[in-house]
Image (cartoon, rainbow, N blue to C red):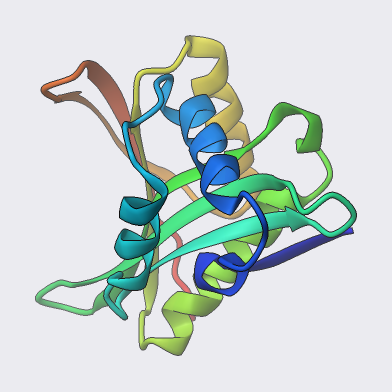
Length: 166
């Protein structure tokens, strides 16, 4: 059984720092240098308009998915930005991504958002980009932009998907 919750609710799980960094390494392709103290400090200082949602396997306490979400005020409305959504390979195809995305939408709606935008901006293979497009299309998102993004670390492709939350 998989539980979806805020990362703040799982800080008491033994070794959570290591488990989150392991999934971050899978997501980003590198392991950020971060001590447990830095990790906990960062999470505890996270502003109210931001959250990291995690999918936790109840039987093993392993993190099988992660979704980073924050709120953004535009001239017209408030929207929910999903900047990361990653499910470990063994947990894919079981609805975990859909449940994390639903939890992100709920976070947005609870905070007055009327739209949601998912931005995929990391260096991934063409096959993975197709998987993202297929997933977000099933979730009622539409691709509104594909643009090159330059970063200090690497270049990547950004996909922006936007559905209404109302």
